[in-house]
Image (cartoon, rainbow, N blue to C red):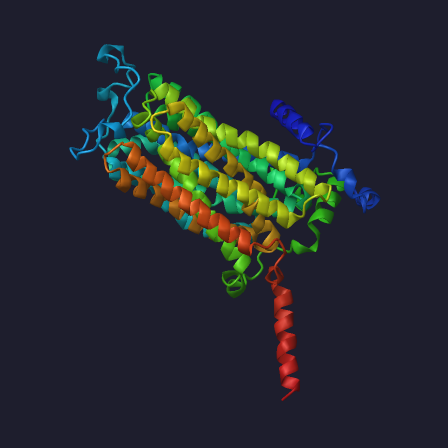
Length: 526
């Protein structure tokens, strides 16, 4: 743990977060707390408990995405090669393999046809890949409500722990039956569904607004790292004597190790942490202000469901996830079947766009926070600029994929641009839930994530229907054009209707008081 903290401290030092790494201090007395009252900067310079939380959230999301995307690589080694459809198409619509396939006796065991255990067509593969998101759809709102009412620590930790157990059981389920495997992946999705809403609840209690963009970037960076590591190393794990099941065993076991650290070192709020300094607690509470209320407030459903700024964020979230999930689940298949990269290259190249996304998001978020701090851009300008980059750049690069043809390396470059620039969204729509209503950040995230999960199973299903066993350039161009159009619609709506102001319905008691005063005024006029 100490080694991880030292690595994390160097990252914060680079981004202006921290200058020194301090050991856990003794609990502060009331007199010490009085000493720091009003000294907001005192809690800003050290490596504090909020940074420990960010570190554990970062590794938590690394585990989450490792267990989410492992199937995208494993399925290529699990599924038997099916004969091509006899539907006529031009030979120029297919890319020639750069080298003849190796002889059977030269193949690694995991590459041979005999090692592939499942005879699934494209539609069945789409169902298997999308089954995770059917479950994920069901629990996002539940996770948000539970986090709002009981705090995010238990909900977030329980979600990842249960996901780890189910991941370890996945190979047994797959070999039992396709239905059992689909059900297991649905349960994995249900367990993971509570994590993003509960994370947003923790962030709304722990991270001051002036640190929120870069903190979210570092937390969500765990998704990128988990994706990069999983896609890069899964091919090597599959080559081992354990074969494709190893990608489930390794990441499931590592996630259980993470769970021990999480429950030992995290708390729901600064007030509950036994060893936080008075300076850091004062700094956090001064930054968050009075918008952060108590847990368990009554949800103002009518106000939420008729709030244009929130509904626009939801639409943008759905559109953004369409392109993201389409590439996340289908990229290894495209690189193998269309551009003919071998499996070892496939894993590395599938990971490269997400590495670019992570690095870009780190640099971009630090720069945006500096512009905010220097008052060179307003908050709403940062949010709009970020979503222009996160939507219109991918839109253009996906349109250009139609002109790539069989230039496999140019295709990789454009995919890196597409995925990489979406990292700007962490300084855009992903900050909205804490800004619009910090008291209901978990609930808002749950609603948005629930609806934004639909592309997770719909995009692979639509892709499978479009491809229809025809791994051709024209079929994949249709897939890319559709994603490009969705990016355009989502990005445009966000720019027109977005708001960064805390909404009046964040304080439900204030709403009730206003309604009561209005009723009293009406009675007096009678």
